[in-house]
Length: 100
Image 1 (cartoon, rainbow, N blue to C red):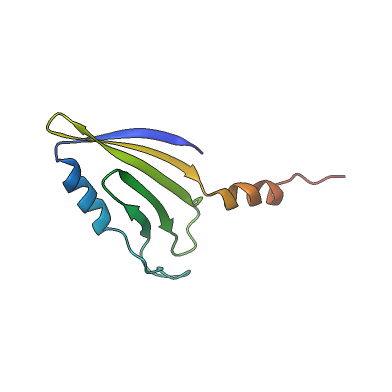
Image 2 (image 1 turned 30 degrees about the vertical axis):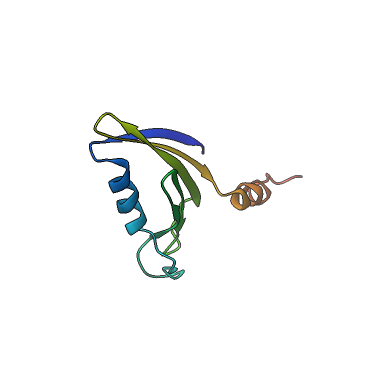
């Protein structure tokens, strides 16, 4: 459920930041139709994103956060993902085994 990884790219941090900010939206895709979109914030220090789920996707909603680290002539994007806390609290209640 928790994951961390690093993405190495040859472009500078400002370009990575701008490209990531360009794919964010404030519009919801709708519950039953539309493409999956992302919302969140991006600044010079890093980012925090969540998925807007579409078409009743069978994936757990996650939060991805990270930071941009200059690395030589490029950027290392350090990413940490985790489930949204509301889902973490609800799922164990729904999946409790039957008691006889």
